[in-house]
Amino acid sequence: MTPARLSLNQWTTRRWSLREAVDGCVRHEIPAIGLWREAVAEHGLAETATLVTDAGLRVSSLCRGGFLTGPDRGLDDNRAAIDEAAALGAACLVLVVGGLPGMAPGGARGPGFSRDLAEARARVADALTALVPYAAERGVRLALEPLHPMYCADRAVLSTLGQALDLAEPHPAAQVGVVVDTFHLWWDPEVLTQIERAGDRIASYQVSDFLVPLPADTLLGRGMMGDGVIDFHPLTAAVEAAGYRGDIEVEIFNADIWAADPDHVLSTMKRQFARYVSGCVGSAEKTTRSTGHEGRTGRRTASR
Image (cartoon, rainbow, N blue to C red; front, side):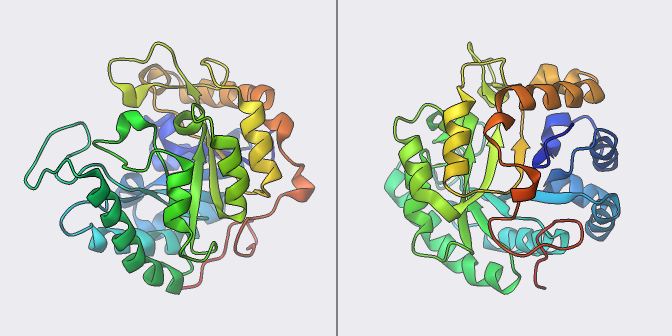
């Protein structure tokens, strides 16, 4: 039996095309999928919306917008991402906010590089203020994702859930939420307190394990639940106690998992999710979206 709130983040089976990932979810009775913009663009936005709807899947998230610390704050690309999330009926648009100004993902310094971390965070706040009305008009919830501190310089100047909540709080919870990702937040001694504080701002709960030792490319240090060092029980229990009843995405970046047979990956994912995560998860009868209302497939129906 597959837990009613399990979602496959598309990058977990990266070798699959979007259609193959959707078919895999149906075949393995996984009721939701987290999509990536690159794959949606390759398949076609309208075609993807039809494919997912016809398969009866919920879109638990669209990844990703963000990278808001550059000179232009990436506003045009983020507005495009908001439009895509609306068309897909995604529960949220995940925002990876960006690193230091002029620092590309992976660490290459470009024009305008600055070490001013406070200024970078101020740019995120300014860009968020500019984007929220546009997203609200389209029924899209923005979800700030704090990343592990090792990614602060080049990917996300938000490293704790508390920092993400501080930026979200000037805006209505239905418009700006946060992502709780176990890989990024398990280490934080304040994480359980901050999850309680988050309450209805939790827009997405993503799970994967933290491998030790990390690989040379630390971006690929996520593992299948149970293969690393994270204790999922208190984190999941806290997210449930905070009132989150949305889908729970398994999002894994791992070269060995990407090279494996995706059907085997999904079988393992379901087994490990049941063993390490779903014991704290509410029953299907209690499953609701944390925001929005339900369409016939259970997806949040976005206003256009």
